[in-house]
Image (cartoon, rainbow, N blue to C red; front, side, top):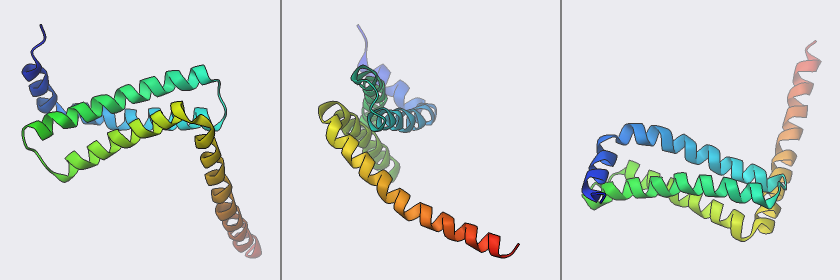
Length: 131
C-alpha cells in the first residue's frame, strides 16, 4: 500500500521542480480550455482539455496542501493555492456552463478590440506623420 507520508515528503522535497512544471502547465492548459470554449470547439475536445487542465490544478492544490499540513503559511503558498483553485473553477465553468463562458469571452474580446485598435491607429498616425 502507498504510504502517504512518503508521498507528502517527496512533494515537499521536490517543491521547486514540481512548481516549475505545474505553474506553466496550469496556465497553458486552462488557457487552452478558454480558447477551445471561445472558438466553439466540439464539446468532446473541451471536456478532454478540461480534464487535463483540472488534473494539473488538482495536483497543484494537493501539493500546496502538503505544505499547509505542516504549517507552512507564506505568500507563495496562498498564491499557488489561489492559482490552482482558480484554474479548477474556470475548468468547472467550461464544463458546467460553456455558453455563459463563451458569452463572457466574446464580450472581453469586443472590449479589448475597442480599446486596442484605436490606440494602434493613433500610433500608426504618429509614425506616418514623421515620414
